[in-house]
Length: 228
Image 1: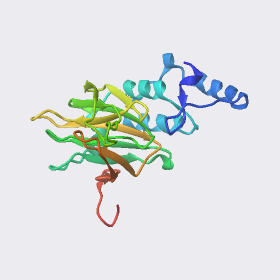
Image 2: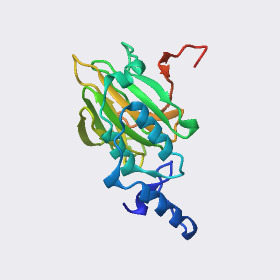
Image 3: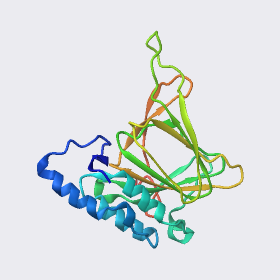
Image 4: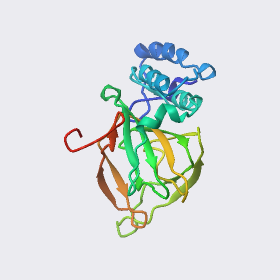
């Protein structure tokens, strides 16, 4: 693992000074990709992520591998799985002392997100049940008249159970959809740092709008106006 693979929480590369290079090197020795632990359950995964994110840098490859090593078990996450018939839901599992958060997203049949960015955060996503379609897009470009134009698709990926994907704003934008008409989908998301709003994009015009982020439930209990 190269030290250059470390990134700040906002996704930018780290300009490493000699005074901290040795500290980062020592930390990376503990994060050897050939020796990534296998979390025994979701609680164990959450605890290991807490330890990893206690440092100021994010080793993307290590986090992806750790999340891959956790094998989905419905008894671990069933208490957090809350559905809404009209939209996908964002259910908070752990708020990471304000440095990151871990969410369970529930996608009923045919539900999906808008095209969106991640407010300069890292986004790790693991499929826990069902299958999800991720479509990545380029950032919108302006045409000769200075107006936004139709979004350009980069690629499509089917995320199957226990598979993990990663995105940040330097990679592009994405949309996530449950294309099944008969089976719901469940995904585990890690965002570092957490954010309270992002930008959603119109696929045909590329125009952006600000979207406020909210939780459908927290720690297994549905959010109401009094406890939001």
